[in-house]
Structure formats: C-alpha cells, structure tokens
Image (cartoon, rainbow, N blue to C red; front, side, top):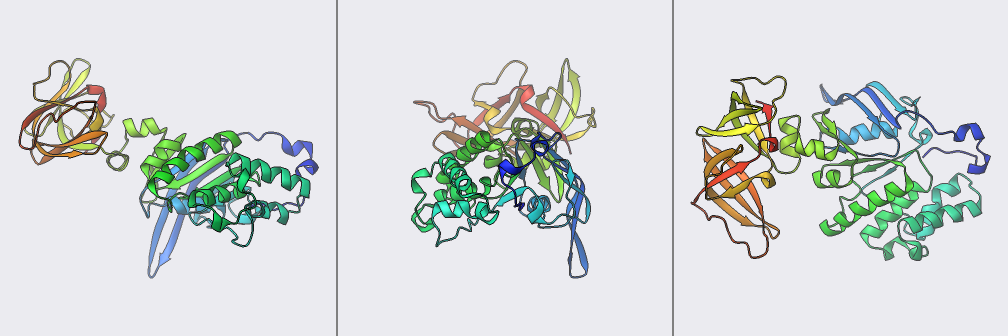
Amino acid sequence: MAPTSTTQSEVPEADTAPAVGPAIRLAGVTKSFRTGSETVRAVNGVDLEIERGEFFSLLGPSGCGKTTTMRMIAGFEDPTGGVVHLDGRDVTGVAANHRDVNMVFQSYALFPHMSVADNVAFGLRRKRVPKAEVTRRVGRMLDLVELGNRAKHRPSQLSGGQQQRVALARALVNEPSALLLDEPLGALDLKLRQSMQVELKRIQREVGITFVYVTHDQGEALTMSDRIAVMNNGVVEQLGAPAEIYERPATRFVADFIGTSNLVRGVVGAAAGRLWKVEVADGSTALVAELPGTVTTGSHIHLTVRPEKIHIGTDRPEGDVSRVPGTVAETVYTGAATQYQVDIGGGEEITVYRQNASGSTLVADRGERVWLSWRPEHSYALPS
C-alpha cells in the first residue's frame, strides 16, 4: 500500500540492507469503541511479535478482536493505546497508504472491466513503475499463483479460487514487507478452501513475505501457520506453534475452541511415582504426567484429552494408563472414523474417535459397557 515514486533500481543501496528484529510488533495495544453510553474494549492490551517470513494467524470466534487487531496493523484503525511497529518503525499514527503492508479481503474487489494481468498491474502502474518492470513482475506473480495462462481473461471468466489467487497476486506484486489476509477463503466451498490452504502456504514459502492471517477456522490455522495467537474477548489466550496449542492448551477456552477436546471435571489425588492420579466421574482414575504450577493435591480441575488419543474396548486395560468405564450413548459413522459418545457417569460424556481400518467393525453399540484408556502424557490438567 505504501506509495513511492522510485523504482527498485533507484532505491539507494543503504535502504536495501536487510532489516533486523520482528516484522511486526504490538506493545500494549488496545482499542475501545463507544456504543451509545457504553465503552466496549475490543482489544485489550495485546503484545505480539511477528517474525519476518512467518505465517502467523490470529484465530478466534467472531467478536474476539482479531480483525480489529489486523486493522490496527494495516492502519485502518488507530489504537486507543499502545504502539504498533513495522520493521522497527513506530507507525502508530501513520496513515494506511504510508505503511509497507498490503491487505487481502474475503471479497476479491477485482476490476471487472480489466484483464487478470491489468488487475495485478494496477498498483504498480499507479506508482509509475517502468513498463518493462511491470511486465516482469506481473508475469512472475501470475506464474507463482499458477495463472500465467489466464493473463488476458476477465475476472468473470475465472472460478472463485482463481479470482482469490488474482487478488493475492495483486497484493504480492507490490512486494510489501507483510501481507495481511482477513478471512480470504471464507467465500469458497469446503473442498476448494482446503486446496487453497495448501496453495497459500506454498506461495508464502516461495515469496518469503510475512503473512498475517485472520480466521475463525481452527483447521485453516493449524494447516497453514508457523505460529497462532488464539484470541478471546480482546486478549491473546495462548500463543504458540500449532502442535503446542493443540496438544497443550493453556486455558479451557483454547482446549474447547481448538478442534474437539474432552473436558472432564476431576480432583487431583496423590502422586503415583512420576504420575498424578485424578479422580473423575464416579470414582474412576485418570493419570496425568504433569500439573500446572497452580494445581496441587485436592485441586478441582478440568482434565482435557483429545478424542483420537483414547482407546475404546470391552476388556479392562492394564498398565500405567487412565482407565475409565462407561456406556456407549451414541455411535456416528463419519467415513474415515467412527465417533463414540460414552457416558462415564457423574453427568460426564467422553467423545472417542476410532479410525475405520479395512474390515473394522463397531467395538460396541449403543447401551453396551466399554472401557476407555489413554496414556498419561495425552491428558492435561487445567485449573477449574
């Protein structure tokens, strides 16, 4: 978005030296809105550092503050408090068109009367980039998004996924230091959306530009991101790599929001060697390998364990595993797996996924008694 009257060849050598530090840094950023007589704080003291060349996602439900946070990075919203840095420069009061970032929205906003190539070239021509340079950069970008053979087509002749790739090429051709993407795949059908997730990650890896991606879709964030900031009620509840957030959620909200997780009430009992016993449901015992620092013997907790980590069978399991009996309340065939809803007593149900291998049959049907088991390192205790 940042306009300039110079071409690449005219930029002084000193200005092309690689910058150091994070690409984007937010320090204590807040944003409040007035709604009638009330003040609503949409973003509440967010601190973030987004590294260069990173695919970073802001993930959370509607109204959590993720889009407002992105709009403050872009310059479309001014923070009520805090500081925004881009490439080490304080841009808190700098207008959007003077920030070296571009933004891609869910609506493609392509010019219908222009060809694909002209759409991509639009920003470069407004900057008065020489014609030969425009041709070179547009061609490179269209090849990158695999639309080189559609350069002369109009947007109406393209599919939704192809139009989104044109919008992406138009943003990338300006070579911004960061690209901001606000739920850009939301208008696509499921299969195309999944295909575009892989394409976006490939493109980001090839161009090496920092991507900041806003989404409410956990699958999108887990698939594409190097790191994820999970937001809720204007704050970052957890920041980390996808595997870390999925396997070791820091809060009940994160455990419940990311994928499918079982949250079972329990009470921490005595240590059993290197493990801790947790009493759940009607006196059953689960084992955990680690407790958070605030949790001790006698603490009421929520035990979280992912459905795919749980083994279901009719025989009582042996060894150092969590052992919980229950009754099958429901079975659902989903194609790749069968989902079991198991009543373990005390008003608690546990969801189990069992992969449908060749020739597999139901372990148990509705109303039958089963045993659930999982390894201690696959469950995690969260303060109640």
